[in-house]
Length: 306
Image (tube, rainbow, N blue to C red):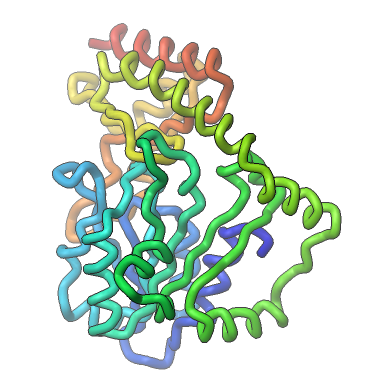
């Protein structure tokens, strides 16, 4: 596949039947924006399930009403999550599988951050969870991943899908008509990257070092904690500043040349609440020294205004 983004979008077009009344796609909120576009352009309406602070910013699937599940055809799962870094345990996978069995929807598991983690063991993925639960046919389950985060090569657009053989069959047919072929050069580079684990281990170690240094610095002035996985810090804007997340991001960029993404941009208002509001996403993808300098500027900015 030419990257998991393209695959996630295209997959929705093969799963959704817009002719069925109330066709719905359930998305986490906040979320990777491709989910919403994929839902809308497939002829469905997105329903946003919030990530809540009370659950360490994991998605509250229990908040989705039965009437929504009844018309749901596809659900996007992102674990480790973007932007919160939350990882779904086996109990949550079991819950989603049971809902899928009951209502017949397909689960699209976006796992592009699965190899950037900070615990002793890798995050539990959808296929592994299904296997542990004896669901070895992977019915109504598809997993998506790529080299982008694992190998720090987002521009290569190289990934793969795996899961339910019937879903792959229909997806492959769709790609026959719309998919662009991957160049031989990218294919060879992809083979080399997938076959080498040492650079992944080293990459993960670098992220661990950065988070170990940066998180305590920012925790002095912001509501921020080490995530389960991924390379984002999901930080709360201090109430004492009297600023929205958007105002905070604009002022920080203007005065200190540090870029963060307003959390409200990554979420949608649902049931009167935008769960991304008053938080910002910080990507620790630069060199350690650059991340440290950016963190120092953020601390200085906040302290100068409180």
